Length: 216
Image 1 (tube, rainbow, N blue to C red):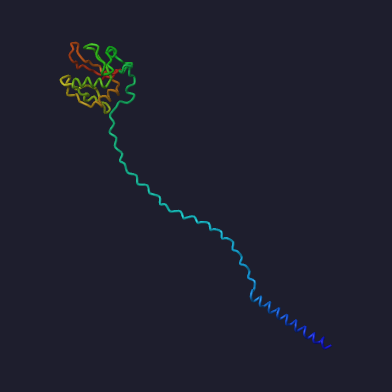
Image 2 (image 1 turned 180 degrees about the horizontal axis):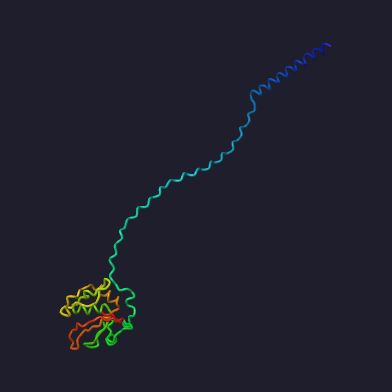
């Protein structure tokens, strides 16, 4: 009976000692290792921030240079020229014809250019060519003219030439070739004239003729 009691007393003591050792060992291990630390969560790779668009450069619009003021050149006054209708009714040979064309026109030799020459001395000639008329006047020192007092609507009236020593008159008034030919073409006139007399001497004969029978 004594052994059994002693055994009972010893067993709990042994257990107690073993339990203490086990607890101490556990605490020692716990103290060494410490509480288990949670592994830090891996941070997700940061998304690259969208690049901010560089602010647009302010461009100052260049001001257009002020246009230079150009002074329009004044056109020179246009020379008087006959209206396009002035030559209507001109014949194929270069003279004006109409229902009132006289015999003197049909019986005269037509001179349509400066290269044309009279068939014979004393021949009656007719032309409407400006160059032919000017050459004829220049060879005689004649100046284009009109008869004072015959002007009409601001233009020359009766056309003539101021030829030194020939048909001189105080009523003859010299005008420009532009004015002379303006009236000549406007009234559709022809010039009937002579280059030479029958004896070969220079002739100053001339007169204007209208196919509409208007007094030249």
